[in-house]
Structure formats: C-alpha cells, structure tokens
Image (cartoon, rainbow, N blue to C red; front, side, top):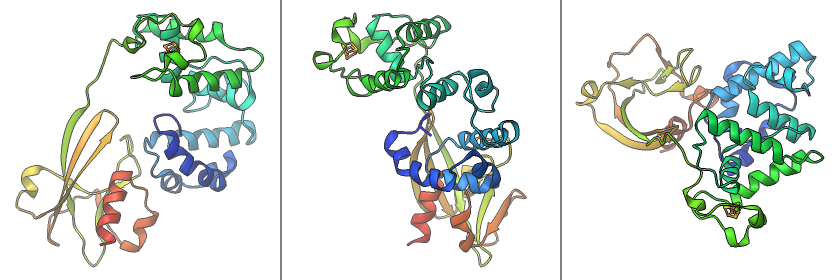
Length: 290
Ligand code: SF4
C-alpha cells in the first residue's frame, strides 16, 4: 500500500483491509471486483491485482504460508527486489538493504555523491552503500530509521542539518542540490470529456478492459470534445494521476445519446459495490448525494 501512497492515506485504510483479508487465503478467495472495491481510495490498482495474484500463488505453492527466503519471495508475482527486501527486513528482521526515495536522498547526501540516482551507475552505488551500512543484527530498526531520517530530517527541500542525528558522518556540502537526477519529468496536462447519462435503467458507465491501468474498474464514459460541445456542462474536476494533471469535463447527455458496446447502464443501487477510481467515486458521490 505504501508504494506510491502516502502514510496518512494508508493508515486510514490498513486496519480495515487487514480485518477484511487477514490471511493470503482470505484475499485469494474473493473475486477481483471485491478486491478492487476494497482497495478503493488507495489508487494504483495494479498493486491490488498483483497482491491478489501473490495471495493465490502463496496458497497454491506454499499452503497459505508467506515464504521467508529471498528466492521464493521473488518468484511470486508482483514481488521484485525492493518488496522482497522490505518483507525480509520488516517482517522477518533479516539483513536486506532497502533503498526507497527517502533512503536514496539520505545516502546521496551522506556520501556527497552527485552521480544521478536514476542511472544504472547511481542505482548500483546506492545499493552497495545500503549494503555496506546495513546493521546486521537489527536490520528492521535500521531500515526503518534510515527511511524516517529521510522523512523527518533529511527532507528534499529543507534538510534540518543542524539537528540531524547523523550530522557528524555526513559529507554533504550543499544538501539541497542532492540527489542529482538525469531525467526530471514535468507533469503533463491532459483533458478529457465525459458524459453523465442517467435513465430509469441506471447510470451509463464503462468497464475498463483488460490490459489497461484500471482494468475491471468502472468509469464515466468518455467522448471527444466536439461530440459533447452542444451538451450542458455539469461540472469540471481537476486531479493528478502519476505524472498527469487531469482536467475532466462532465456533460449531461440526453437519454437517446448514442452509447458504445463497452458501456452499460448500472442501477443506482449497485453503484456502491462497483470498483471505481477515487476521482470518479468522488464525483459520483457529489452528484448522487445532491
Ligand atoms: S546532515 Fe543534513 S544532509 Fe546530512 S543526512 Fe543529516 S539532514 Fe541530511
């Protein structure tokens, strides 16, 4: 959950998720729609699909018991080097070096190294340094402390060097300039035009096809700008997704507006149980609770 999602958002949802799915078997047993719906609000829905695939593999290959060695962990779907190291270190207190964005920033500054961290040379150096510094007898506390150092003292814009507990080991002369990155990507602005088509049968929604980022989730049907130009505008909404700044315009469509085969009318009573991305759910709530 914490990959890409903030701690306050995860904290608000973690307990509920663990009550609903206390074991890999519990998550493996539900259908994908139920898993997606339970994940709503956390975003990046690929993670819940990978989590469910992992839960099913754990049930099939390991009798429902989470594996505790690196090779078996990495063989599971959705678990790469970072997640395997995080599980080994935080769940089992095994010595595995962890490099997330906070740790990368701390290490680049501690060593005062201008090598861009998004290059293979930069990644290799970070990993080597994380391995060298790793506390062998308490890797769990060490990794947590290093991450927290990056969140609390060694922040990206205003590092608190005078109060920093590792100041005497730090070689950074201009910490704000580190870590260096080769590819800085500016967010891209995108716009889309959606329709609100509500009839006696229900609200027109489109289920996202397999292979797309939001596969299995429902969204407002999209149209070209010109095809909705004559329709009344209900509202606009701005939100951010990954590196995109999105502006959505929602237009009210008449009952005889042409629909597409991928779109379906969903009775209002079923809407709460359907998986939807947070911006769509928010908009839906605003419009149905009016
Ligand atoms: S002294 Fe400053 S730059 Fe160095 S680790 Fe601490 S907060 Fe970061």
